[in-house]
Image 1 (cartoon, rainbow, N blue to C red):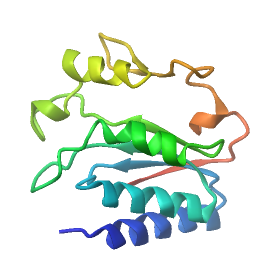
Image 2 (cartoon, one colour):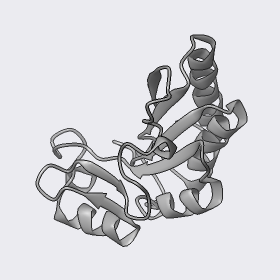
Image 3 (cartoon, rainbow, N blue to C red):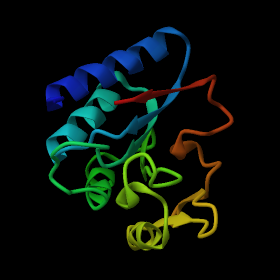
Image 4 (cartoon, rainbow, N blue to C red):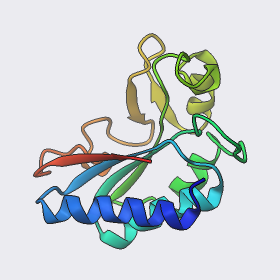
Length: 154
């Protein structure tokens, strides 16, 4: 099982590799958020590299975990959010892979709305933070000034 330190090392290596390749923005599709410490480690790696990023947290697909997701995303946003780093609740399109609690649906959409996220109820498309300019907002990691984007999964 991945330790928080493993999350840090893997995310940091991915971010540094992206920067070395000229990529300035990355999506961290973090589907191994087993504990708050795991999430903190992944986010600290992004902060420590200085890359513009989106930390999209998701519950693990298997194994033991603290059940802190999706609520922990609000804590991460409050603690680490900046002009370079934003946060999203990551979900799967269907529950066929990892079960219904990880698929987009009415219950998860309601939980996201409670945390200030906006999603299209039919498609699950992320419409951005309710208190931000929207999906094109450069603080969300998708601004026109970005030279390139990359993603990492863990």
